[in-house]
Image 1 (cartoon, rainbow, N blue to C red):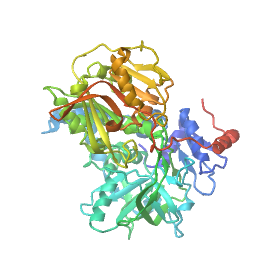
Image 2 (cartoon, rainbow, N blue to C red):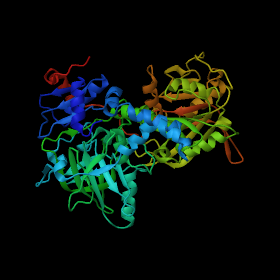
Image 3 (cartoon, one colour):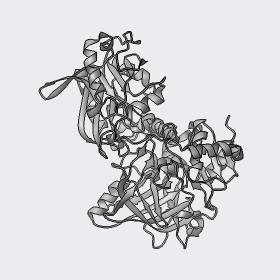
Image 4 (spheres, rainbow, N blue to C red):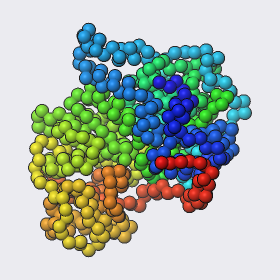
Length: 589
């Protein structure tokens, strides 16, 4: 497809999916506010030609619709993966007929790989900055309480210090000064593993951060690939051509020849520095914590380099569309990696790690539970907080339908397992401590066990502001804030025992307020705001060291002390963009 960023930009122009903005725009808050308004309206990609304080233009919202993600890669890779996965068992040993039927895969694999090119064929080497100053880059500050400007589409390349196995990941980069940044290694990510290995050997870890390059490279850096699969090779497969790299004397890593920028340096041993806050894709600020630093030693870029960026925040943002595309593409691979797992889906509305659902095999009693544990041991899925399991084929993307399906089959005594004291996604603060929390497995297997209620027929008890159904079997309650009554979930549990109107509902969600939630707002409000061990309430008995839970199950999804602030643009920037909107000449249909 596209061997570099600018060829993709030209394609977007031809398809009238990109707008060029001539007016000067400030990368401090203003640019991000423009971006948010456009992506909310499912508008075009944005090319800011005149960015205050920098010679480089900025492009954002490249992947802000499914149409543009599809355009970046094309339909061919997904078709090849689906066809190959269907015939996978016949490849071992290979059968001539099957190989012929999958000749597109074999041809694509033959075209895939890495190739070295000479420096004169590597545009990234056109300029080597002699007076290195990261402040010359148009790095965005997206939210008013961000700790500073952040590089938001960094392609961070590292190699294991012993095995030299490489990793390409996306870890946010906060600019600290002219030649130093933070680097936000999240747990269970490849770059962090490499840094850990380097620290065990008491050596600095060489790091190269690329900006731009083939769009496929950006998607590959984000993709939840199995540990043994190279992101660079996956990007080459998506491109349908070999990925060009160039070796530079004196530098530890080959550079992506078609990148817009390459920032080279190292992460030193044992040094930590405050990083954050940062408005992240959970829709809240991740807080200030100590993270490693990245000492920058060289900066290469094209003569006419384009700075790619994104803006993250409450779903749905660009990562939503990229994540859904990658899940659709890789869906046929998961049953091969995890036999017995027929389908799996993680929900972008929750930040991906907070909620997943899977269809598994249940050929004997409790087999589904073994597949649940297998999922929780696989790659980035280990960070899943809430895992829903069924053995019936159903559309996992339609969450209300899935939840009704589960609740009609759910027996909490046998089908609810809460696992305490586990690791947790770095961006999820519901567990009370960084990287720590709990998990829950919820099963809904076999035939229905109950008929679900669809409408609440009782009275409005004291302290409750509003009651409505989200779907059959799931009741939403708006109660007092946690600050007013932190024990209201426990009080509600006592109320349920004496009020038959609640007893028929297997799942009750308590929040500060409910409007008319659609799937996106419901999933974001609920699953980013509770820790299973702390915030799930029900009657329980202990038998043979097994917790026998009895419904209804209450989830307290109210905002609690210690939770980060929600992301809200500052009024001054909102007013500025309102005033200047005609200058930007952005037309949104």
